[in-house]
Structure formats: C-alpha cells, structure tokens
Image 1 (cartoon, rainbow, N blue to C red):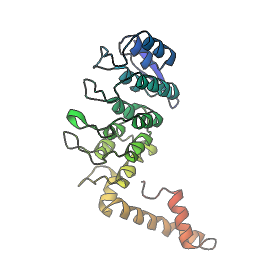
Image 2: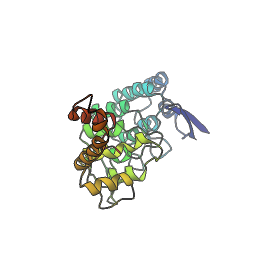
Image 3: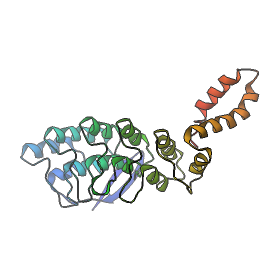
Image 4: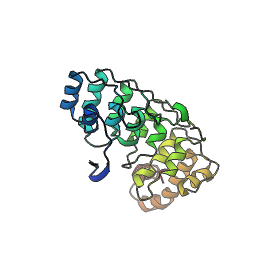
Length: 250
C-alpha cells in the first residue's frame, strides 16, 4: 500500500509502513484519532512492526501537514513519549525530523529537550541527517540545529562530518540546497583537504570562508563600483553588492 504526501507543492509516493491504530494516526498526523487511541489506553511508546518505530518515529518520518504534525507531537510528548528513543537503525525522532520535517517541528523537539548531538552507535547526529534531507532543499533545519548547539564537525563512525554529507547529497540544480555549504563553513566546519565540489575548491584555495568572502566581494566590487561611482560612495556600493549577491555563498 502506498502513502501519498505533498511537500512544497511536490507530490511523493512511498510504501506505507504497517502499524497499529496509534501508529497510523501518528503517520497520518490526525490529532483527534491520536488522542482517542491514547484515551483508550494505547501507550505513546508502543513499538510498531517496522524498525522498532514508536508513534513519534511514524509521526516524524513525513514532512507534510506541518501544523497537524506539531499538534500530534505535543500530544505524544504530553502523554509521555520518549523524545530520544532510538529505532532499530539508531535514529531518534529528532534524526527523522531533521531529515524530513519542517523547521518548526525540529525547533519544537529541541525546545522539548531532544538531544541535539546524540549520535548513537554510529555517531550520526541530527545535523548529519539535516545535511541529507530527502524531500526538499530546506536548509532551515540545519540552521536551527546549529543555533541550538549542534557540533558542526562531529564525525560519524566512518570519519564523515556534516559537511561531507552535505557535499555528497547536493542537489546540483537547487541553488538553495547549495546554501548549506556556507552555512556549515561559517559555523566553523573544517574544510576538507580536497574536494570535487567547485565551490569548496574555491574556499580551500582562499584558505577559509572569511577570506573567500573578501575575495568574492572584491571581485564583485571591481565590477559594480565603477558602474555606480557617480551615484554612491564605493563603500556603499560594496555593501549593496554584499547583500544583493549573497557574497561567499557561491
């Protein structure tokens, strides 16, 4: 059986995982049914037949119906759902949300006390997961994780940092998705020694993201300052260019 979901105006189909009635209510983000199942005695931590998923895992593996998922999240947490419970793949609810959900859902989990740096057996953290989002190019979940203390250079079992995940999962046609790279670098991510990615190679050649930003701004300034010299002081032109052209982002 397939489940159809719509995220950012794109329709996706995926196999519908089996589960009990409370798992179905969580997967489909139906607050009324979820409350009903809890009132009937279903545990908010009951393990389903798929990958040891609990209701929170079912709820947060999908990215559609953001408001309803937020409501269901609060219902489950108030009922005593374990916010850091791992599934068979050692993924917590926050890991699933970082991969698939709206930033508001990620923020709500963090506010409720989810461990922002839990890596589990393989030390794959929520920030790693946010850097390989499945359904869209949203970089906001990574930003909110970083603001809440995510370790930007955490290494998984194989020595890979979030930046490595981001480079590996780049959607080449998505300029917005590429913004994850400067976000990580400005947060202190260490540059690799070498890279196949053209942007990362430019930052490596500059030495760090700060120097690359200055080089980029100088290059753009050399183009635009002369064009507007009769209208604005050079420094003001540079400030406009810095803002308008997202200096250092590409």
